[in-house]
Image 1 (cartoon, each protein chain N blue to C red):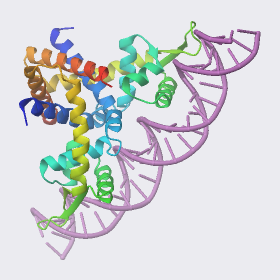
Image 2 (image 1 turned 180 degrees about the horizontal axis):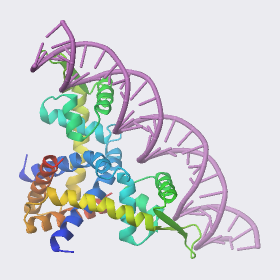
Image 3 (image 1 turned 90 degrees about the vertical axis):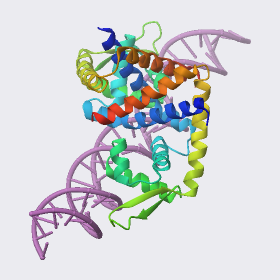
Length: 144
Length: 144
DNA sequence: AACATGGTGTTGTAGAATACAACCATATCA
DNA sequence: TGATATGGTTGTATTCTACAACACCATGTT
């Protein structure tokens, strides 16, 4: 196996192992917010509001799945729906105050956890790792 | 936010987004083998056999979940159980011929997919990325 | 204006994944 | 031997998810 193939193999294996653990990790760090719920809230915060369809496309979920997640998050008071005046089919989703609060708490626990885990990384390594991940996800989105 | 915090934030966000997509990606790349099933088979291949308890610990799954997954994979002819002669409570799991075959097919599709996605990465970047991922997972395992 | 077509979201339904608790069998240790 | 711990299975309930059918709105064509 060439050096390149070996690296690809490692990337694939390590990312898969990480993904396999992510759900349980989320459940332990913030039991009140599942991995899906967390990612949706974080996405809404980052994007300053978006449509359910965008969420489905971004996270490779069926629109019905997103619809139920959104309904649940709304019932919990974490998000609000605002009908788009320009297109009445569209609901623009926004964080509600309760969602801002619970997202902040969950994110804080995640950040603290990752801060501890990566405490002894050099700043340059950390910064490069972050850039690689961004690039990888961008590449993944570009090659569906 | 400091540069370090910013990098940590990016790492956290990108890894989460990746994890959120992993299940659907696996389902599309190899519908006959779910993400869990794939990781279990790959683990068995890598470890040359292991116990169900080890799988549960490694992937943060309940032992009942692993038990059912293992039972299903055995029914499909993908793995074999061999009772440990030194400890009759233990079943050592091994890949069966059918498992070797289907794992190879799934892995080939995964590898091809990632090969295309990362086609224009420099070898050094790829190698560094792989090392960072290994290190990250090791750190995560060390800080449970 | 009327109609076809497509995009956005919801609901019905079914299956898979998962956790927790209770349990059985085996092993280890006092 | 009896108490305790470990590995695994099964009962049960919940959650996540996809697919299909549907309703509603928008846009373009005739």
